[in-house]
Length: 414
Image 1 (cartoon, one colour):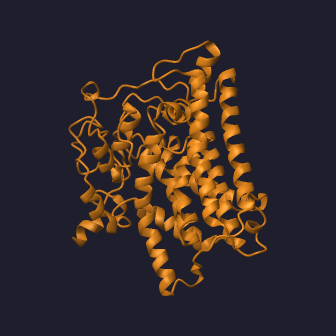
Image 2 (image 1 turned 120 degrees about the vertical axis):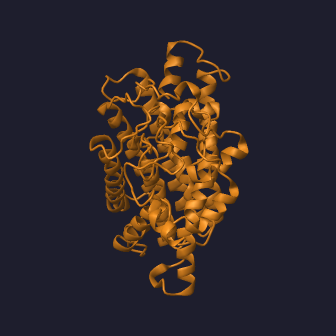
Image 3 (image 1 turned 30 degrees about the vertical axis):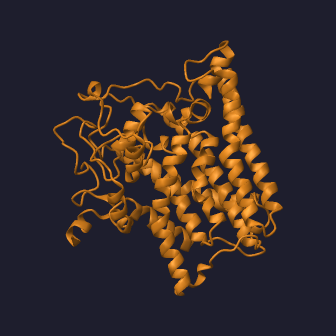
C-alpha cells in the first residue's frame, strides 16, 4: 500500500511524470483509443481522503500554502483591501502575483510538452503549432486572471472591513484553526469537481454556448493556454465556485486555495498529450466531440449518471485523430466587425458585473447573506438572461444561424 502511494505520488504513474501514460492506456493503440475505466461514485468517495496524495492536487496545494505564507493577505483596516471592493491598490499588489503564478505554471507545461518534447503521444499526430492561436488563448486567459483578482478583492474588502466574518489562521496551532485549514485542503478539490460539472453543463445550453462557451471550444486541438481561455461571462460562472465562502464561516486560505485550483488545474488538463502525469484524455474527448464528458476526470461518475459519458474515441478516429479546423482561434488577422462586436459584448458583461459588485459590496454593511444572494443572482442568472436575449436576435432554436450577414457574423464571433 505504501509503495503504491509513493509510486503514484502527485499523480505519477510508476513513479514517472513524463513519457508515461495512465495505467489504463494500451500503448499499442493510438493515443485516445484506450478505454477509460467507468467512473463510479463509490470510487470518488474512496479517493477523497487521498485527494492530496495521489493526484496533481499535491502540487497545487503546495503552491497555495507557499503563496499564503509568503504573500499573505493584508486584512488590516488600513490595508489596500479595506479601501474599496474593487481597489487599484489591491490590484497593484495581487494581480502581478496571480499573473506570475499562472503564467509560470502554464508556460512550464506548454514548453515541456510543445517545445521540448517531454511527451510523445499527442492526440492529434499531424498537429500544426500556430503562435496566433496561442496568442489568442493568452489574451482571453489573462482576462480571467484579472476577473479572479476582482473576486478576491471583494472578499478581502468584506473581511478587512468586518462585513464578513472569517477564521483567523494566524494561530494555526489552535484546534479551530487547524480544523478549518485541513477542511479547506480536503474539501475544495471535491467541491470543485461537483461545481465544475453543473456550471459547465449549463454553459452548453444553446443560448450560453452560442454567445459564451463557444469561445473556449474554438480550440478543437487543445494546448495548455487554452485551459483558461474563456469568455468573461464564463469566467464569472467558473469563479463562482468560490461564492460559498460568502455563506460559510471559512478561512482566507480556503479562498486562495480555491483560486490556485481554478487558475492552474486547466493548464495540464488541456495539454493535448496522453503520456504525462496530468494527462486528461477524458476532457480531450469533450473538446473533440463537444456534447460529452462535462465533468472533470475525478468526477466522471456525474457524466455516467446523466448519460454523457464517453470512454474512448469514436471508430472513425480509432486509427488516429485528424486535425479539425479551429481557425477562429487567432489574433493575426485584421480586426473585423464581428470581432469588434464580440469584444464589446465581453467588455459590457465585465463592466456590468464590476459596477454591480462594487455597489452591492459597499452597501452590504453586516448583511452578508443579502450580499451573497445579490452576487449569486448577478453571476448565476444575469448572463443567462443576457445571452438568451442576444441569441433570440441571432439564432432561432438549435439549428443553423438565421438572418442577415451581420446576425450570422455576431453569432459566429460570440
